[in-house]
Amino acid sequence: MKLRVYLDLSNAVTRRRMAALLRADGEVALVGTAEDADLVVSERVVATAAPGALAQGGALTARELEVLRLVARGLSNKEIAADLRITTHTVKYHLAAVLEKLGVRSRTEAVSLGVRKGLVPL
Image (cartoon, rainbow, N blue to C red; front, side):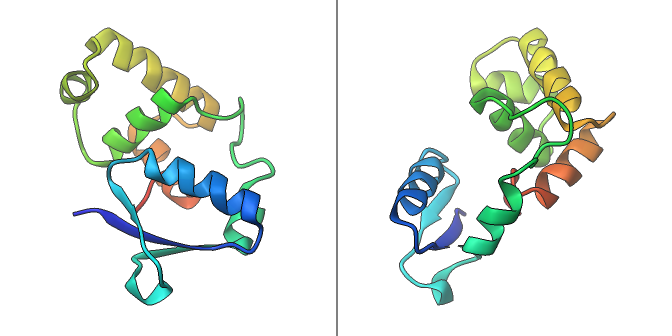
């Protein structure tokens, strides 16, 4: 089941960029009304998440974000590797980068922070 997202954004550029990002995720479907949505992304969410969204070392790469989202779904390193068609060593590398950039020590902390910062959909 896909996460249904409605973009309540008045700025056309921001709306287009957010839509492009969300469309890239096969687990997300954009909907036309807030009533049909599981999640509404508003101006306030975008504004509060933008400056300093990550505590320590900067933005996550697209692959690191994929790994974090798969961790959030409860997948093991081996399952993540199979899903992304990479080695388990590479998964560990990406996961270490995620932990460093988020300034956390465990997978659980990374997922928790990712959810709070809007990096991981509920």
